[in-house]
Length: 104
Image (cartoon, rainbow, N blue to C red; front, side, top):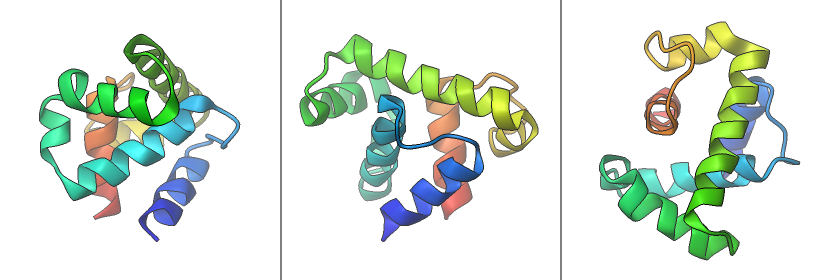
């Protein structure tokens, strides 16, 4: 059920499921909602977990999510900035934090 809300929110930001980063973002929010400490140590805990789940390396996870976030910023910049407390080009952690807070 959580995934449906996340997917709808990402689609409202202009991101579709044909991007690998889309699936990484959806799974990230699922993990963060189960354990918020994933946000505190994204590169040490979150990225390796996503890499294992999707059969990618850590660098590919980061790149895929940054590409997806960049696409959201291009298509729906004002909405992303509002969600990320004014950040025009948010980091992955800022985007995930804003998305998680927006869904609560």
